[in-house]
Image 1 (cartoon, one colour):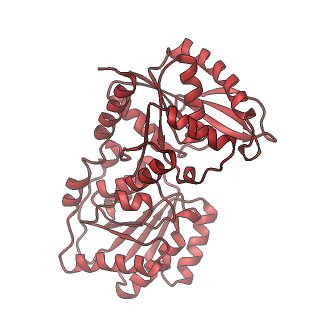
Image 2 (cartoon, helix red, strand yellow; image 1 turned 180 degrees about the vertical axis):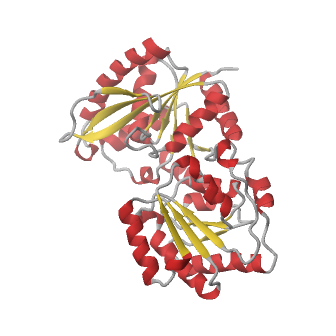
Image 3 (cartoon, rainbow, N blue to C red; image 1 turned 90 degrees about the vertical axis):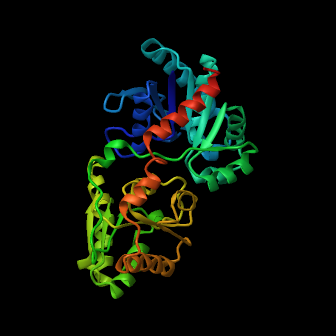
Length: 381
């Protein structure tokens, strides 16, 4: 089967980690025998738009094209202009790769518009996986109404967590399936071994933006250190400026010696941080799917997350904990509880956590589920 993905963002040479999970998922589908192509359409305000120039990125074997957007999405002109660009893309793609059997958009804007336009050109079905919670708050303008129409025309609709699916179902009036975000097999090249007491090593991995609440995580961790001076926190990710601010905060909180700030790390090196940790913490304000939560649990880490869509769906509460969003004291209490369990010899082993979670989040499970959806959409056997 041949599928074309139209993600609303995608890695390129200038931002190789921007949606890197898309690349990993596509490789899983290719390993399952599918042909997978990519067109990423990037919205641009009319003041910066320089034409729908089509470019091919050989690094990620993906096509990129800019799309002009109208102020506040209030007029239909942006879709008319996109249609002209899609026709040029369809001709070039078809000559080189052939016509896909199905088109798969990722997030409604602008991915579903690209998918719907190409589906019309080629007379093939299209579907959607929604990743962004912001779609729940789309405005009642021309763009918002067009998105709703596209969702109803899609052959399949899915998202990445059950709580998110419930709200999307309510918003759009059709049922959204749930597909867990997977973890690539090569992520597990670093062995996951239990660290003996008194190790109490926490890990946080993210882009270190405001939404991830890394500063609040440091505040909670400072409470843990008061009770367990050997506790340590590794923070992976973040640009230089963000890392510098976290360094200042950890010093102000008196935990600089207990915190290691690693900054941005290549994707293929992150596994070693999971392998060396005891616990994982993600205290986001908003999180739809949380691939990193799947990674942590697949590496055997007891995991704490805030009660976002992802936290409530992803965290196996047999081994981890979910705390209220922005409740620093609750986070500190949960972190301390995991340390106490380890100190008393009551903590689950990494082997137990892996056995429960790795099959759920495997690339093989993801590929099998995705292939079933494509076959249903196309009527293939």
